[in-house]
Amino acid sequence: MKAPQLNGQHQVESTIQINAPVDQVWQILRDFGNVSWAPGVKSSYSIGKEELGVGTGRHCTLDGFGEIDEYVTLWSEGEGFVYSVSPLGPLNNANSRWWITALSDQQCELNVVLSYDLRFGLFGKLMHGLIMQRKLRASLPDTLEGVKSRAEGVSTAAMA
Figure 1 (cartoon, rainbow, N blue to C red):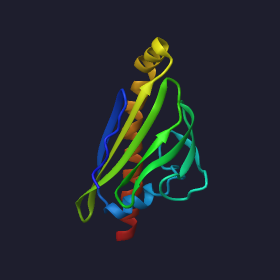
Figure 2: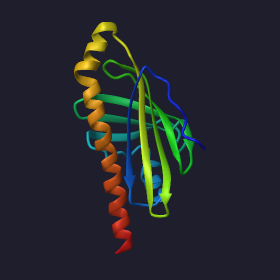
Figure 3: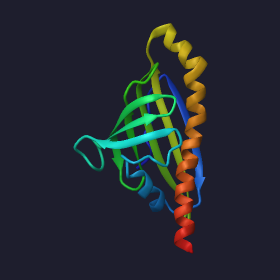
């Protein structure tokens, strides 16, 4: 399946190459309720009735951002998923896509897109321009580094 396009007034995107096989990275990502590896996430836990796939949810407490709920809206086993994000500050109608592409047997690329609209009119635009956009652009690559470190750490341990 090809990674789906997201709609929104604004987008932040980041991509990272990971020296680990796709299935190893997927094992980290498919544990949707547990994002303890992500910098900036103080805590996370599963919410809702689903444990895997569409409908799976999680609640996250974010350092410097507040709290959000996220629910999977599209799931492609072994490839990626899309989830909706509850409103946060000026961000509204947010969706995030996480997609893995194999580069070789032992290397893959992880691409993440956050798409969102703004709320609160002029005030929301100011908050976005002065604070949120910069924080989002900085935090997304850091989050991908968290996945990379965890996957490559597992990969190195598995090889020993």
